[in-house]
Image (tube, rainbow over all chains, first blue to last red; front, side, top):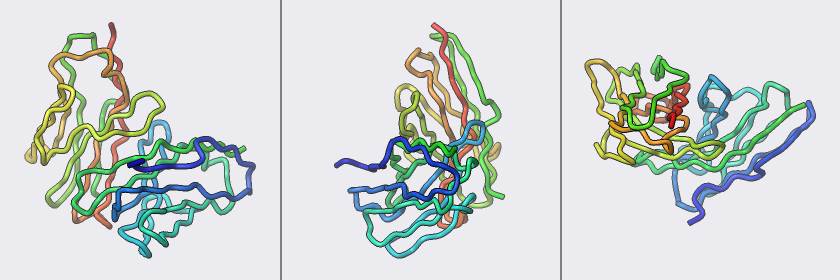
Length: 112
Length: 111
């Protein structure tokens, strides 16, 4: 199993550009989530999904969209990038049994 | 609000000394608590779950419902323990049974 795979690993965007961060898992996990990690603020939940076709907002959803058309994939879309979205983004997945989240390796995004 | 507090941003201990990373939570139901570790620029890895009462890499953590704490302890710190540690709270009362993380404690073990 590859676990949770995120692409790209690094990205630089200009203000106003849009892009999609990809996340895929091969463990047949029902739950998937996106977090952003910022110094001194820990990990904050952006959006999450409890199954294919079901998504909901987390703590900091503004400026981001998600969809979950399959169990495996959970892409995160930045609609119009802003410097405040400079961060490290982590995707994670788990089962409903809640043995804990498995994390991807992260995407380091810089918006200039 | 249901939340997690890690009061120490930075913690330094000498090799061989005991270490305790503090975690307090606020939750009105039955909490599920976890510790995650992140080595330099790597992904987060699950270290401990309170429900399994296990010891991983010499670390233990006991859930104290009276004090609403889930402190992480190790009797003898090693240099390879230097990392960022996050405490996380989950539970059925949280929307979508999601995880909420503390702000993390950066542990440095001095040789």
